Length: 461
Image 1 (cartoon, helix red, strand yellow):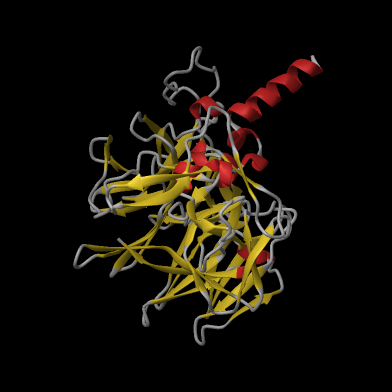
Image 2 (cartoon, helix red, strand yellow):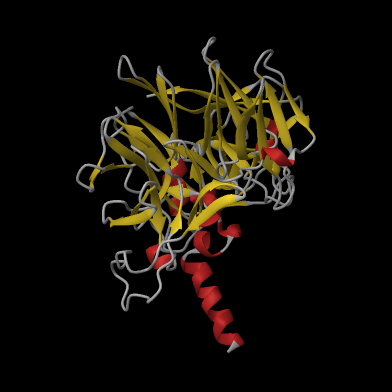
């Protein structure tokens, strides 16, 4: 039996390593920037990501609304919670699985410093006031009143619609509530029946009538994905959705979904000027002036009066101290210097970031980086568009690879896919002798560890 399980794990890791194991992380383009935490204040906007692998751990971004400038605090990387108390905004980070350092941002002078962890800053659950009555929504119940006069309400299975696609329907259905929204003395809560990975999306909307002290359930085939936030727009309840995958990373789901209390109807909501391409939507913060929307493609800022959108993503990295090594290729996450050092960069130098992998950033080579290949892999061809002969890689045979020697490092192995994807360029002979033993090639990209950069968030198309 153990052998069968081991064989299944090996096959799974080959077929889908990024789903089965965290060490199967694949390279992600920098445009896949997850902004899962958004907090809007009068003069500042705070944005961060809660994913905890190499793709989206860029720390905290703070936008100064008066100066129209961004500041990045890259360490610690993973933002757990953002909460205001008095003149300070407290940001709790994840470091590992248990350590939760807390920093505070001073809204008066803009300073940012670590402080002692404060237990009272933890999320205490959703406390709501409905027609003068205090209610708290927990994952399986609604609690009405204050101690000692409280009453706990849990739904019965009978009024809960059976989940689609599940046969037979379980005798007992236990909905999990989240993201409550109060509207006209009722509480609207997305619910998930928690039936396993095959139905790991929101099953519909539960309405708790505070006056009647009763639940009503409305199943939905439109509300696909996991609900991440909710708010009221005119006479509609709007819920945002995302499709979460391994280690808190995400992909697009249904986008914005509207629920109409008047007729209990669901519909896709497209009132905001966002791109037509699907987005995973994590959090919506708003005031009288603007919406700020965290997505899997950065953060969107919408001017309510002009109905205009600005889109922010990482546009460059800035070296944070002198003597930062640039490698080719990237090293493993555990061994920071396990690849050849191609060059050094100093504090303040800017790099164009292309992708992220296991705590490393692939960057456009800031200066020329070269390697050497044997002459047998290079041929001279005539290019009609420029009217002269040039050296280029000859076509590779099936399964053939090209070893590239990089000074001070292990050989880089190129295959047909690598040549096509990265367009390695033959730039000349390695010697002036008539009998050429090797040629120089220019390496198109390089790698720098994320610890060596501050990330600049800027406006993009």
